[in-house]
Structure formats: structure tokens, C-alpha cells
Length: 70
Image (cartoon, rainbow, N blue to C red; front, side):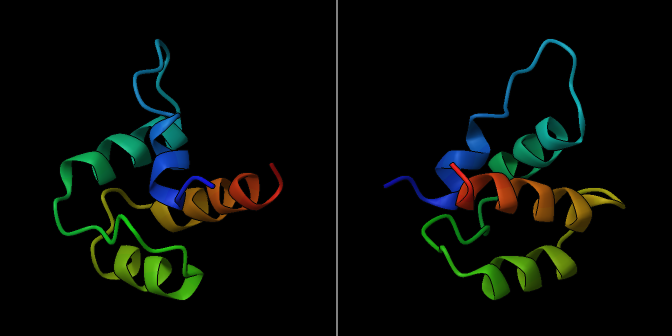
């Protein structure tokens, strides 16, 4: 099973970047992101303190939903 980080990385490199792509790119460049975590609260708390852009938490929730509904 893929980690959340691995799932998020599938949104990198889009020709027309959207918010999910921006989140993936920001997390990719953040060496402190909890890459091996699948804990919603841990990742959400991390992004709350280290948000790569203003709506990153809303975007995180969308990606999290797609991660659990695959």
C-alpha cells in the first residue's frame, strides 16, 4: 500500500499545475515533511505550521479523501 506521501507525489509535474500539484511540489521540496506517516492528524498539524501556500490545508483534505477512496 502506498503512503500518503507517495499518493501525493502522483500529482507532481502536471502540465497545467493546480492546487494539488502545488501541494505536491511544496511537500517534495520540504525535507522535514513526515513522508512515512499515514496519520491524518500528524500530517495536518505539520501542514498547519508549515503550509507551502494559503489554501494548502483545504487542498490536503481533498488529496487525503482521494487517498482513502482509491
